Length: 433
Image 1 (cartoon, one colour):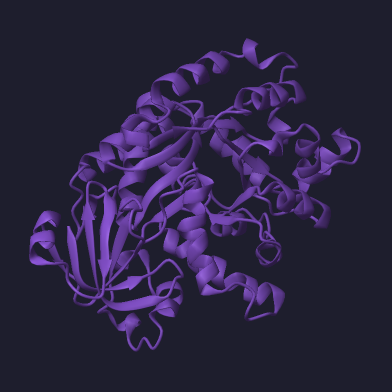
Image 2 (cartoon, rainbow, N blue to C red):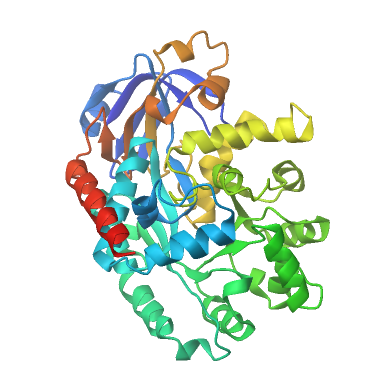
């Protein structure tokens, strides 16, 4: 595809007007302020009229639980522990692998609609989830959820052999669109032995870790009681866990000592502002993390604690709530919010050639319709993207050069069937509870 005469959000998150961008073989092959020569232009295939449009990097959701689309609107108005124990865990105990597949299909459709091409997903039935992602033409870093209470080696848990098979059969599948991560759910749902064993597996490979970390005050308080005053961050560091690439979701209740550790080890923090507020967990100290250079990305979390995969909403919250919380209107800039939703999210997944509009990068792109009233006037459209724009403005989403959403159509997903399947499956599970 050749995007013709289109406004562009460049690698520095600045607007460039009247650009031509050519995509070939899944990558960005041309960027210029003048059209490519006719013989070159012909090699890009379709010409896309960029009038009234803005081209930007697609979004990367750094923390999700895709099959939880089935729980949308089910577990409401409860604090985290009651939300988990009274609603989520009983519901999830009734979910089948096929339920997880269809929940993921619907999640993929929703994310593609809102400009997301890749997500880091922590759940069960990983093979079925990976199949749904590949069929949708999207990308994902997937880990099988680990809950470990027994003090025994990781090798004695059935998930150990399952993970070995997932790494063997799925890591790198779909020309790298599927990556398998290892998972430690949290300090309170793991043991020291299991953590050390997983660390030994991941160390020295191209694998990564995805964890929940310091999400609630209760989690941190009880961890300190169990581990001689150590916070979850300090506890995991004492095990050497941050010696490998880690994406840590939430990081709400962290202090200066914790931030020193996250900074030292370059831990990716996946902030989930909507989920953190909805569950009453609090506010991660994002401005201080950014000041320290801690890589901050953005996640939706599951649909029982956010209710939508519109990552533009989360980007808006990331850019806005810290201004009010800190009484500092400069606390998080629009450019920092955009980086969290795009480039830093891609890097958190180990996707070095993604999340940026640059020659040679993967063609993970979305196009926004900027003709609506919320885009006018726009002396600097970057501010409109973050403060006035919305995922509903997305009119095209492209993953590795293939269109996965365009103007109300999903070329790779039967959305109506996915909706019907999810409605029926949620009703069935609720009836069984």
